[in-house]
Image (tube, rainbow, N blue to C red; front, side, top):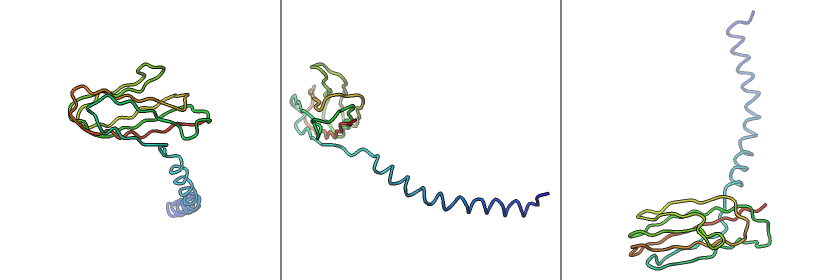
Length: 137
């Protein structure tokens, strides 16, 4: 029969046996997580939100096999406007903008270039910072 004291000792011994393994795995997990975090390929700012603006985003290595894109936007607009991700000459994704701007687009993308178009509606100023990342195969 197992006494409570013996069971507690056994549990403590098992915990101590596992701790060195855990303490070895934790730093590896942190390194994997940090290297897996998205570093954006580029950044572009739209500074004049009173006029139509078109920007072309380019992958750093145009000869690589591109399989996806992520575009993150932050900023502020005085008034309203719209921003589009253009695919084959037509809007693929869009956002209505007013006040504080914060959105993220992502998904499959198979080209080393992407076009983002901003259209003011009644904007009198503001700024949008776009960060983008092309995912490679």
